[in-house]
Image (cartoon, rainbow, N blue to C red; front, side):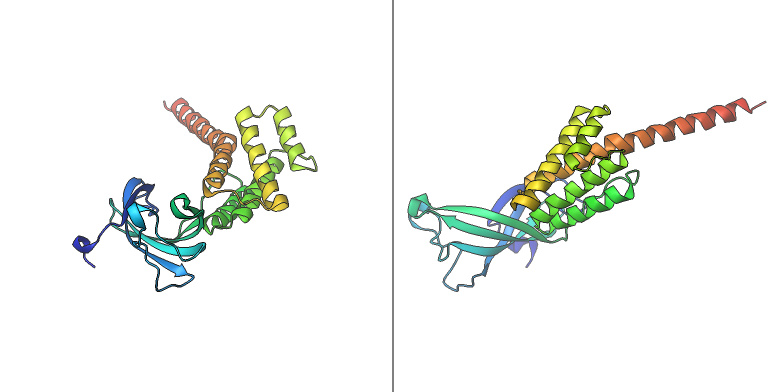
Length: 240
């Protein structure tokens, strides 16, 4: 199909998942079809009277959508789980999960200055997040926080106690809040079976990343700058 032949079914604003584009853009949906349960009678453009929602033959289904980024022109393939609630004009479509199949989303990676055990726990959690395994991702980000607390010298037997230890040591309040929110998400995931939304998990991941920047990356950068200044000073003192 040529570029001129592409017909947009819908548009949305989103961040392009291709790493060399990775910017806010407008995307055109060029294909949409039901994957399961299969139904030859079903059509996404089969709208009811007066523009009402289509007459869906099932209460829940899985559909595939192909989007094209208007900036880089490449395709994004997604699979979405949906369910219908209500009937007639009260019918509503709820999106349960949306998974990007292509391009395969890269995991979140922390800065190399962050200790490896924390980085690996975050990477594993991010891979679970990308796969739509929300509960595993929640537990994984909690694990990263536990590793961070241990690395910072906390020794309490519970994660809540470890975070309180770090608070008593004078860690900034925003870091403590980020660590504790991640702890709660992990506990809900493993003990209550709560599957947090993609947006909520992304926010937790960013909170953990911000905490590692403040605790590891910025201090390491300052040490490198201080070392560079010291070497420059020593070299200047050695000049005749």
